[in-house]
Image 1 (cartoon, rainbow over the protein chains, first blue to last red):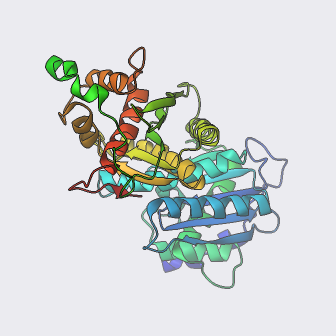
Image 2 (cartoon, each protein chain N blue to C red; image 1 turned 60 degrees about the vertical axis):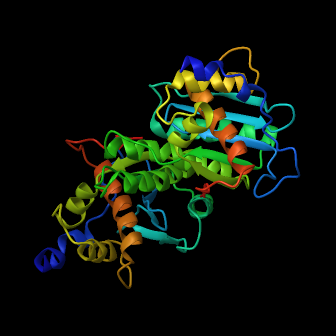
Image 3 (cartoon, each protein chain N blue to C red; image 1 turned 30 degrees about the horizontal axis):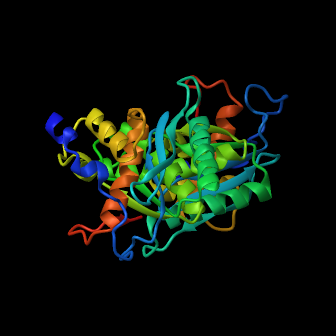
Length: 192
Length: 192
């Protein structure tokens, strides 16, 4: 893992191709979302040379004492505000995932539905990317640890420190979308 | 079952108690929601004498060809419009349910999250009621068929015909909330 992180090649790889944009690479500002009821991660990047830039990122915290509906309202409000401020044109959201049980899947689904709605109401195209694919794209290893992903996100975006796990996952989603959309992928991203 | 449906007692039972309102019976206009990705049922009732009145009900259809995000936007839009038009002050939504698998639970959760958000953003109190409890309240039998519920909803609201299944379930949720909130229930409703 340390060897992978130390590789300099990825660090300077431009996210925008040298040639004219092709496929769905028309998106310059990308929103990544890692949905969760009380800690949705989000990140907005601008794809540019020599490297992508993080415009904003963070975690939408909702205290445990809040009822579920208030958490959902809070999540939607923060996402709407950030979309309005930074004008992303596309959203990459975490795709198929593992849940411990039906109840957990339902709760995660509720948070996910609210994130999808916030992006869709603002007119963003939405693409689903599997967590495994994001890890593969970021550190070349589908079962990578969260810290390894955060460290690579930090390097790719030239951040002074590694973002918190939820925000790092969201930025990784946005970066993976940028990478995927400049290449002819064998497994095209699923549009929602 | 036919015997139960034929009982006249429930038909004329006022949903509003004779005495002054008590507990959380302050709500006069109640929204019931039965969430689903492509066929969310909704119904708004007004609790009054001699019987509750259905102000509006229906199913929010989203064609199979539509991407998921568009279905969610459509669901949210219809709910917001109806809330704005009829001013319900409380929402009863279907609670714990059975899903075939995690993927189904996730999809149902997405629809549910959007419904919760639409109600919460409009400032409604939200209560979760288990489907079994609704059937018990409507026809006295927790494993009742959908048709039996729809027929009882028709009778309680004095409708000319039985509503479609999704709308009937939503109206049944609203009616159950009205019944529960006028009595001291042993299992209080769960607020979301």
